[in-house]
Length: 105
Image (cartoon, rainbow, N blue to C red; front, side):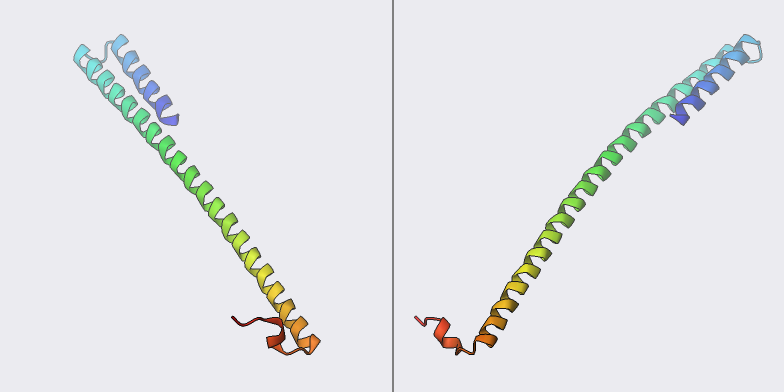
């Protein structure tokens, strides 16, 4: 938005010069054309910046979703390790031979 304000100021200065008789009609038209082009470029840049921001926001959302999924997988894996570890402790404490608990096909 700062660029658009600057461009408006350029237009006002060019207009003041024309009214003051310090600029020819041709110079005034050139200044206006330059200001118009700058305004269009500023608007295009603003649109590009908004699009880039939207892409960045989307990427950030995807990263957060992947982090959450990863955290969930890590928690599951830790829970599974705890369960397996507890099963091994149970087997070790029970004193039973391992084959008694498993059927062979």
